[in-house]
Image 1 (cartoon, rainbow, N blue to C red):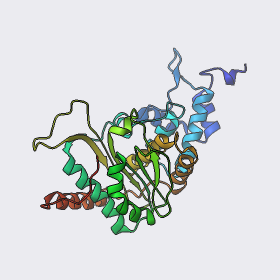
Image 2 (image 1 turned 30 degrees about the vertical axis):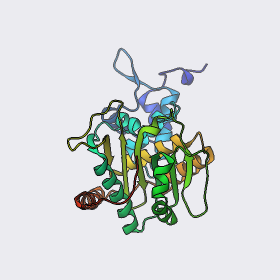
Image 3 (image 1 turned 120 degrees about the vertical axis):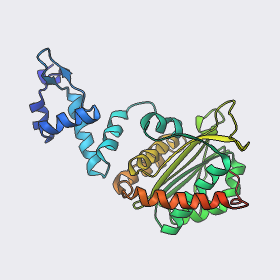
Image 4 (image 1 turned 45 degrees about the vertical axis):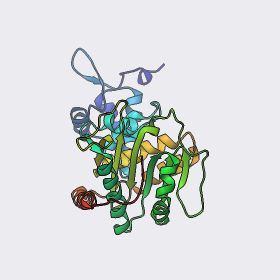
Length: 290
């Protein structure tokens, strides 16, 4: 084994020469993001491994594909872990800064409609993922999702379908097993070049109802481009078992297209305005879901 192959054998100067990153940048990334995570000698000098170099090179590649530094670091450091099975759990763990709220089914439904309708109004080509728990819920929404899929780059509906299907003129239908964590979740991810939003809610065992007596979902949502991009990749992990080729195609498409533009405040205002209007209607949008 050469010195360069031993863990912690490379100096910060060696890593800078190998990656093209300056020593100041390496120190700054370590301070702000905990990455890379070198060993420290008794003298206080940093020592890096070949794996550290490989991860830094992968991070630079992800940056060139359009990811932010934070998202790129998360992507490469989480590679090789067990594939995600729950969008809610993944975002809760990876993005603790995103607030969670107990929302009624009516509110979550209105929010879903707001995200979808804003996409339609912007005529964006996007990647769409939606979970519907039960097939009957999806069939109720199918005409609407067929319309959404007409201009989408990819559209995927996930429910307890008997088998995977790709019907003409509609979203890809992928099955969930009853034991799958996503079978208890309400999720919607919309990732486009100029518009992005994601929502994930879960009914907890022995859940408590909301103050108005409705079923409650512990819910998080975001229009942050990095969070949306990450949520879309988590969905790719989730569909990798029933549709591995499709998961790879969508993941590559997301990386080549880059994340949504950083106009999160405009998107948040538009989605929130729609959501409030929908909640205020005497009768909400006619769709069952979850």
